[in-house]
Image 1 (cartoon, rainbow, N blue to C red):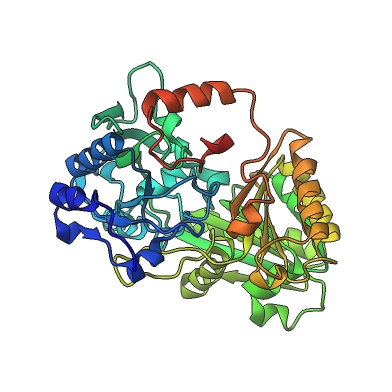
Image 2: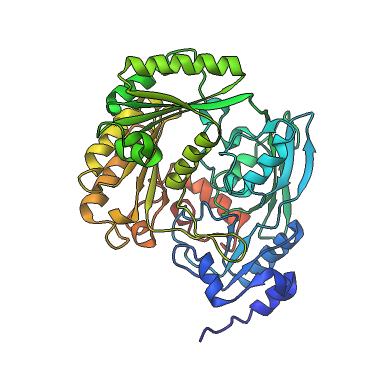
Length: 464
């Protein structure tokens, strides 16, 4: 029989019993790396979030914030977990300035919801695919990968302002609601990628872009990774302006485009080039990209649009999500599975080198491993399914291969981050990679913003 913590009554009094979940079976849906919270709370207002944090600090209870759960696999195993605080109900839009292309919305708003709202005004926030269930606060807290970063930039390039609930009970405002802010320290960047370790993002202001007239993806089947990389190098040397350039190894190619891969020769690679803008400009770019791919031996070249393109993007997200969450019967939250996703950051010119090294290192040990390179921005994702891990843990040869690949990119000024893994695997890996030289400053900031260490304890860099 589970003993009910004495502090639960105080929490229910603070926000209302209808905004708390304490049923043991349902709490398991909100486990973080195997740790099950004693309660889940869904504040409905910014003030309630601040009140819960101040109360938790007084009670010295560990709080892990959560949006839709798409990035709950990121970070170290928590040192302790008492409460999961969901931002699911913080979805209000406090200001939408259509004329100035800015929007201010709650941290719990789903990206897909914001996409629908802005699309009605022919505007967009190009941070995720339009169907993404990730929340705005979660995208900021995780500094999430943005598929179209090559053309538009990352989360930091769109973020104008933040409201943060702090453990002290204060609600801090950083930045503003206009594109041109006054000079000074850009405190928004401090919370970008902080994984809820410094405060909880309750509201954010973003700048928007005009919705493109056309958005299509060219898919080319190439003999192997090498001609694919050569095609990318030629493409990058032109004046073309694609939004995304992905190179997929044969296993990933088969998963992303099974209808094409089954017709191709074994060992073929897949190149995906997304172009968007005015119709005439996109048509010209797609024609030029197709010519480049055919010059490097592409056996099949086709343009994907509409529903076909959405299906491809859905497959990409399903593979690279950290990891795909299982839906909860409560508020749509989730917890992860048992695969491993590793993100390697390197120079765009080294993407093929890293991908080839990954193929040589992983294929003999994990035959189902998928390797995807974002050639335009210098990222390589290694996606290993549960079938590649016998018991959730990583065997010694595979562990050595993953460490060698991390060392390969770190040694050339890059980085390696484990985006998701089982708790057993996380104990074997350096989730955040080697500590940076500014870790002492980061530690001091953690003490300043969260003196009692109640926010996501242990999950952030260096166990903060």
